[in-house]
Image 1 (cartoon, rainbow over the protein chains, first blue to last red):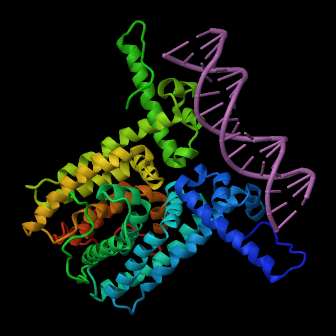
Image 2 (tube, protein in one colour; image 1 turned 135 degrees about the vertical axis):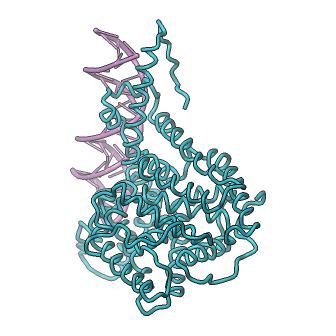
Length: 231
Length: 231
DNA sequence: GTCTATAGAGAGATAGAC
DNA sequence: GTCTATCTCTCTATAGAC
């Protein structure tokens, strides 16, 4: 992310840079939470400032406009989003590589649910702020990873799938547990999902997706996954 | 949905009621589109009025507040959302019933993408307006349908799955093509998805999910699904 | 570099003429 | 039942003191 204002720092010392970095971090973290809860339009600079524990004018000092701040939050997220798919390489074992990828995505849904929601909200409403990311970076990456999957299929190492729809499936299912967490919790009758719940759900998601890919189950079926008491 | 204002209609005749019905329909349709594009907070009554071709005050006359209008739009959608899952019944053939359900959901993603987005947006931001729907109606329905799937599994008619995670998977994958349509199109390099594209994608989604359920493929794998020219 | 006070724009809602 | 004009409030953004 690029800051509009240049830090002039009259007596440029390490401490000054440290305060700036810390404030920027606090603002970005608070902004991610507020944008996730209320959406881009519904979020207010006052809410973000409150959550960051800073006066409102400070946000404008560091980030200029609300839209600039929103883009900075998105920028942080995009980097996070691209990385884990690199587990898929031509020479890797398909089951092992897919297991690593899906596990990482589920872990991201648990620990970075707010980031996932900001991203989902942006796409849901047209993705105007990330048009280039989608049609250039992401598209190229998907082309490359679809080729890897096509290679696995051609070598008979997994069932024939349309690689792009298969990737969409992985994204949809794993991100569902972050973006739709409210629905998941209400339907399961849980106030919140524990780390253990997530581990069980991840195991079941792995079984389902690997079976969809014609790959052997990684583990035996469990007695039961997280379900409500009345189930 | 319940209107706040009672139609007094001094000389109550059919035409009067007809105009009201038509106006209400136009407003609801315009509101669904604007809420889908901009979210609840980002939508403005002026935008909705413009799209409906009516003056702003008319919206308040029919629906009271913006929040009332938003709830009316949601109400319409919830009814739509519950119905198709009833394809899953104990005596049905699992592959046939799941095929019908998934096909209907994919068709809804194509023809009612805006409704899907309004629903997704509501859940994404906490689902405060549909809390009872989620924790009562939907939860009960999922309990019932999970029991149906458990029955199929117990009879050895499909692979052992966690029924609730399996249902979440169906929702996540099918609704992805409505909610994340922008990403799908950009990654595939398509300006829009035709009816044929959707038919091919639906076939692939069916193959993936039925295989995940340990059921036979409904059709032979295609030569290729919709992909960009450079793929 | 930080914060208070406020200007200015935009949105929801309504009064009151028709 | 319909629409114009307007009121009021909230939010972004900034000026200017410290």
